[in-house]
Every structure is written in C-alpha cells, then in structure tokens.
Amino acid sequence: MDQDGGGPAAEPDAFDDLFDGDDPAIERAVLNESDEGRRIQALFVAAFGAFVRDELRPVLRDVAATGRQPQLLVNGLADLLRSVADQIEFPLDHPRSGFPPDLDRSP
Image (cartoon, rainbow, N blue to C red; front, top):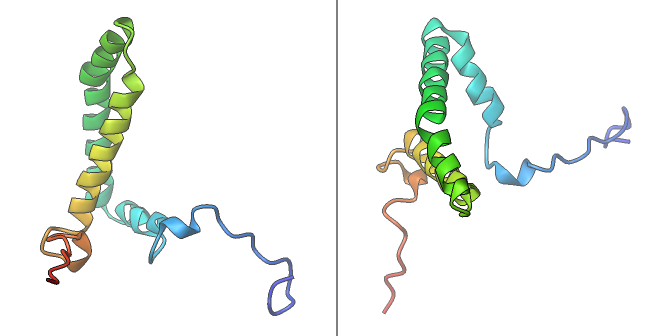
C-alpha cells in the first residue's frame, strides 16, 4: 500500500537515481509541441540515420572484418553523443556544466 492507503506503493524506477531533477522524457516531449520542435526531430533523425548508414556502418564492418572490436567504437560514439548533449543542455558558462572544473585550491 502507498502512504495514504490508496493502493499499492509504486515500485522505484531502476533509473530514478540517474536523474537529478525534472523527468527528461517530459523535456523531450516539448519538441512535439511545436512545428519547429518536430522539424528539429525530423532533421536530426534524418541526418543521424544517414551518418549511421553511409559512414558508421562501413567503418564498423571493416573493423569487425579485421578481428577488432567495433563495439568499442560504438561505446566511444555513445560517450561523444552524451558529451555533446551535455554541452547543449548546459553550455560551458552554466553552473551545472561542470566547467571550469571545481579544483581544490587548498595549500
């Protein structure tokens, strides 16, 4: 039961600890609220899809054909995308960007 006795308590989401603030799904949904947002989505999906098809897959196939691990490149690309997304969300002059790094300046 939940705290007010109105039914079963909600199970904690496995991803709850990954987010510190508003639900990111709600923020992403804002893109659907305007013609400009929908255009941004469509352009991004088309451009990224073309990149994956024309550039990324051939490189990954070549890497795999030589016995190396293409997944490491995919992991690196995912990290790059996260980094770019962080910079878009929190530009370098924003306090939450983490830049400049908070260096301990004690003697």
